[in-house]
Length: 108
Length: 113
Image 1 (tube, each protein chain N blue to C red):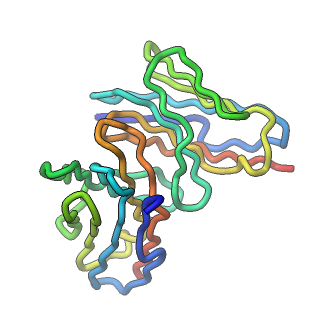
Image 2 (cartoon, helix red, strand yellow):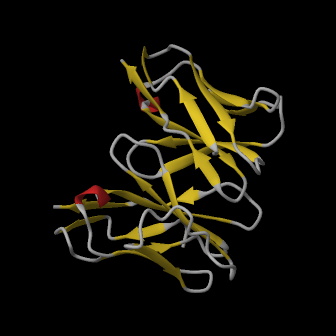
């Protein structure tokens, strides 16, 4: 059965800290690994990774895929309170399998 | 439109009633997905439409759930004889052909009393 596992389930940090969120996947028909940020209802797209070892960056956020280890990490540097959200990882192709998410709380 | 839209944003219903949830995908997106997210849980896949192909209904939890899509546009998710365990946020997403990035709508929060 396809599955995506995220860790930790929750994380509380102080503003300015750097965090690393983990995602591992076992998905048949794997083509892409995606990261989303969910603050209220709608997940918003962050990154799509298809090639192993190539880092994608957007401001303080970055992510990399390791196809050998079937895993990905999402790094957030210099965290801000606005980074508080649930971060979802998903793997697949046309059909995505989602993890349960990591709830990040950034305290001032 | 600019993004995926869903209506209503909130729906409160009584146990046993039928409900219809609507999704308008991004214009030109051939793929449309429905997910359910219970409180504190991850996204649970329900159904997937791709163009004119037969939909993938493998995630529908029971025969009380059904969905339709008109061509490559609007979709409705219908839940018949609602139960309290149907209470959740129902999210719709769309994507372009052969592009895996799904763009989500704001969701419908369904509460079954």
